[in-house]
Length: 117
Image (tube, helix red, strand yellow):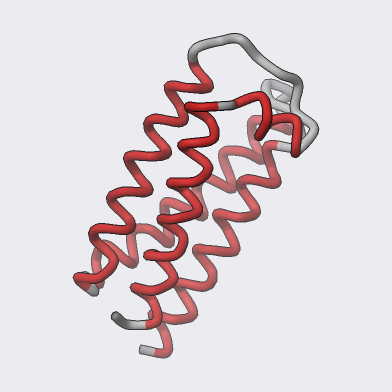
């Protein structure tokens, strides 16, 4: 696996862990970052989507498909932007930006690896 592929592969495991936490025990994860607990089903729905994306990352990364790796950079950077917008508009708590920062850092890691490789 290339360095860029490894970055996406490892990020996929972060997504799997986050997604499964949102499915199984969402309020535990939310409390760790200071977000109010919820009883809404949507947090678990989000967890299932995050888990699915994590599976894509883990299963696709070893293929070293440059287009896929490049797309993850743009998509993860856009997640950061969306989370900032949601927080600035006060439709989501500011702590949501923490998750966006993880996406942005992961995107930067992949971008740097793509440029080197």
